[in-house]
Each structure stands twice: as C-alpha cells, then as structure tokens.
Length: 305
Image (tube, rainbow, N blue to C red; front, side, top):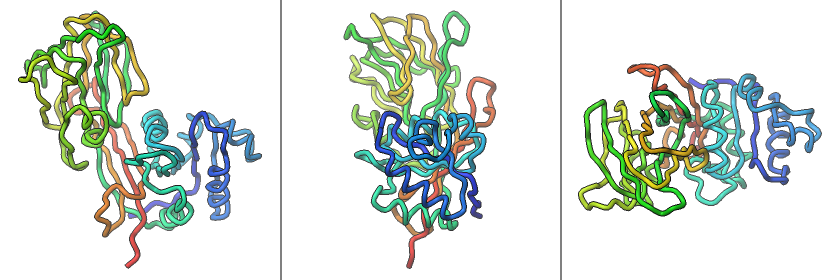
C-alpha cells in the first residue's frame, strides 16, 4: 500500500550555498502539485517564501527529501525521528550507503516514488542515555552507532559492559562501539566488525583497538539493553553517529538499546537499499522509558521489466 505525498520538505547540505539542486527538486514537486517546504535560508535564496524551521517542516510534511551525503542524511533524519515522516536520500556525497539515489537521476527516481512505485524494508536506530550520579544528563539517537571513545590525551579507557542487567565483560581499549546492522558498514567495519545484513535483528558490540586479544566483536539480540560503565580513563567522549557528542567522566553509565525501523525498496531489485525513502517513527520501548522504538522506512522505485 502506497501513500500519497502532498506536502514535501526538502533539505540540502547545511553549509552549502549551491541551491540549484534544491531548485530543481522544488520545481519538480510544484509542477506535480505538491507543496514544498524549505528551510529559511534556502527558501529566501530561491524566492520560495520565508522558509520554515526544521520543527515546522517535520510537523507539516508527509515526505522529506534530503539532498547531500550520508552525513547530511544521518543528521537530518536523527533530528526528525520523532515525526512520522518518510525520507528520500539523494546522494551528493561520496559513498551513498543510505543516500543512494544518484543526483543525476533524482528527477526520474523522485517522479517514480511520487507515482507510488516504492516498497518498504526495515532497519533499527539506537537510543543512548548518559547517566551521571543517578541522573540523566544526555540523550540522543543514532542511525549507525553509539561510541564511547578515548579523548585527546591518547590513553585507553576502561569500561564494564552488561547486557540485560547481566555482566558480560570488562574491557580496556581505545573505545567501544554499539552498532546497528546499518552501521555495520560504517565505523564498526573499519575496526574489524562484521558486515550484517540490514534486516538481521541484532546489535553489535565492537571494541576499538582492545588491549586484550580476548575482547572481540560480538553480536547480541536486537531487543537487548546494553549498559556501559566507564571505570577508568584520562578523558573520554560519547559520540552519536560521530556527529553529536558529550563529555564522559569516570562512573558515567551509558544505556543503549535498539529501535525498530522500516525500509521500502523496489519489488524485484536485488539492491535492497537502492533509491530509498526512509521513515522513522518513535514509540515507547517494551522494557521501560529508557529506550524508545523507531521505524526507519526506505522507499524505492519499482524496477520496470
């Protein structure tokens, strides 16, 4: 079942002054009878009104198009996660793992999606909460990974890890990554983690340069609650998709748990993540208020036979 998109929010690279791709997208949408919502700076530059804040776009849109690289997509989608809005990612960067509609084919592919030619696949997000002295001091979500990493001093950090309140390991390393299957091809892969098929229901724990050879990557069930307690360090930082961060002190506890997501793709494509619209919907977790659940939906055009 497909959905008719009547109001479309459009985002570009945050610091880019090249609005020509956004103009092309906006003209396509207006020509097809859709209302277009742009951020304030882009709206004024393209003479398409005063523009809107991100919250206004999230509340009013029933589709969001993101033009940029994977970093742009991660940044926008995480901040719009609490709105029930699907996303299309158009690749204007390098890799394009989640923004893999090529920019030179965006008109054709967006038209296909607007015509209802897409399907849904499912992913997960991670939510992390930083606890200090029994109080929550920071909360955020990640599409790829949550990482506790050593700071500028260069010294290793020491952490104890529990899963579902059961002790699992004590590690000394440069850092520890909690990754989604989507993130298994990102930072997690570069430090020796396995590649996980996106629909596999699991979470990955991957140490970064561990002191002991006994500390290896491990795959755990998707619905697990992971608690990381920092027991020793010189300085450390908590990262979400390597975009947002928070300073970590000895004794801090980081609680992380996955969130369900849904992705849409073409009916016969073997390239499951190609030409995506992604949808994120936050819900309350089954095990309490610490973790929420999200749907991350990607849509893609139907391949013509």
